[in-house]
Image (cartoon, rainbow over all chains, first blue to last red):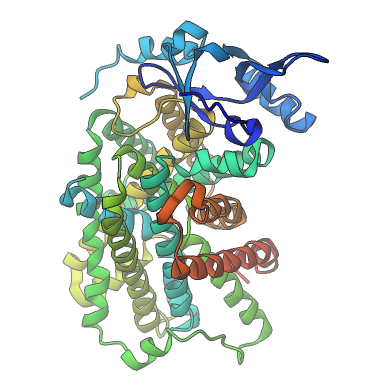
Amino acid sequence: MKPDGSLKLLAEVRDLQIVDKDGKNCGICDDIELEGGPGKPLRIKALLVGPGAYEGRIPKWLFGLVKAVSGSRLTRVPWSAVDKISARIFLNVPGEAVGLRRVEDRWVRKLEKVPTS
Amino acid sequence: MGGLIEITLGIMTAVGGFVDVSEMVFAAQAGSRFIFSLIWVFAIATIAIAVFGEMSGRVAAITKQPVFNLMRQRLDLGPGIIALIASVVTSLITCSAEIGGTATVLKYLTGWPYPVLAALTTLALVAIIWLLPFKWIERLFGLLGLLMIIFAVSTVKIHPDWGGVARGFIPQAPVTLPLKDLVTWGYFVVAIISAVLFPYETYFYSSGGVEEQWKPKDLKINRIVAIVGFALGSLLAMSILVNAAVLFRPLHIDPSIIGTSALQAAIPFGKTGLMMALLGMVFAFSGAAVETGLSSAYSLAQFLGWEWGRFKKPHEAPRFTIAWLATFALALVIVLTGIQPLDLVEWAVVLSIVVLPASYLPLILIANDRKYMNQYVNGPISNTLGWAAYAMICIAAVAALPLYFITRGGKL
């Protein structure tokens, strides 16, 4: 179940591991996107995943370094894809369905050709 | 979690992780330069690593989270990234020191050129991690690393002044020494604390706990493994120190060269002792290389939320696999630049102690947090020992760089 009480977003959602419907790790919730406006309720729109979400959370020089090493990829995971939150965030869909695990899957296909035990 | 696996994990952590190349170098030098006056530092640092090891295992069993996930949540993203970079660099340099140490010892055994042996060592380790199931890797390095027991057997055989050894456990400083030597002694205190408390040991240990799905019922075994495993490793390190004080000091042998310590077993046991010591060192150092290489990948994968795990096949955790492959490749490049393994050891130790406060703070905070840990939160003993150990590593971290530069890495 999603928490229905007041949720301390920054402390309880940000920086948590995201796990998809198949139990696979899909990255970390790097930030949260909210929607709403004056006089309207504030709602969570999406979880932001990827180094692109670091901007604004870390000093500019450090973001520059991160960007140079890993780019500034950013994936928006709609809040409707979230199943429950405990010490990890569990999705109700496979990661691929919301744009996660793209790099991981590409490497799976390359590495599974190499023999192992 | 089967009993045998836990014990093997304990042995591997104790031998492969505890007596690694840096511990061997510093223990031998400590004995030959300062006789028994640094034994107590090993003892106190061992209590500290046992406390943090137990804590990381307990946190893994209860929160199902490895140390690096917690670090990010507790330190926040910016400081977390800095800690990540520092930890990856430290693991990389430590890994290259272990590969360099293994190649140096193999050179004594085969006479082949050092760069060739470094490359062969790296290739062999990569092949072993790639091809063998992790349980076999644990058994291979854990059991063959037990050859290191020859150092403890040698200690018994050479009949040291046991009273003097016992007095070495009492905290002391050789205040009668000239200032120059006293400062070098201080550098050794910091280096030994760092070598015993290398952060990769807790990353490796807690990651294993998460992967093996430890549960609250496993906590008792976790406590026994942490205490007995680390104590066993520490006794081996202390025996190297005592042997160096008894055998090397009177002959003015400088054991700063990796491999010299094998003479400790050769003097009482001849060629057989020498071979056992050298082979033990090969497996202990290369076991530590495996742990450090994988630790670097653990840090990255856990911080960034990738699939990770040593029990997974390489393609099942592809970015984790690429991370450890890259660590070994870079470690080999560092070794092949011609930097002396001993310098790598010094850098690893100094860098590691600077990183330590950031590594252990999130761990101790989480272990104290009832919201995460429920009834398994730190008790008064864990808490007192944990914070005392934390204060010790903070002091050592502040003192590390000045002492390193003043003593030119203990070579003053």
